[in-house]
Length: 195
Image (cartoon, rainbow, N blue to C red; front, side, top):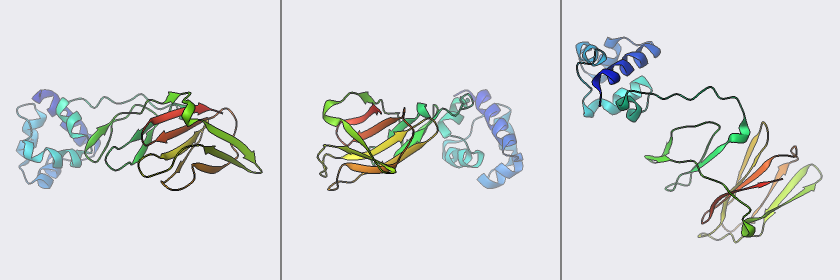
């Protein structure tokens, strides 16, 4: 851990938040001289207050210790580059449209890599009036089921959750052609299919 880099990071984040050294010191029950010492690179925060400090400054604790935030380039709004994440502990489904540091239940999550052309996970797509009926011939028991189906178009994402013991099908409004369907199986992971 480079105290100089960490100090510069604390200074930058403090100013970004519009806080004074005294504001941070009062929140953490330390002296403002301690905050000044950190910002000048003459010492680093104690492990016991890192979590509180990262919360006050609104930054990830690990990134603070590395002394680099590593920001992404501005998002160009291309929703087709969506990334899906599923928490292995609570099954929470998260998405991002750019590189992101995502965690859930205390664990860092990696984006799922969608597989293509899974023969036993082929979705059928049928237009009925103003709805698209999407179905898949797949078992839906508690140990093996489709967790969600998502439609991703040029400017829209629609995610529908599915649950064990129900049909593996959804109805969604008619969308523009050229999108992709994503599905997530509790045993086989994420797959993608063009429509």
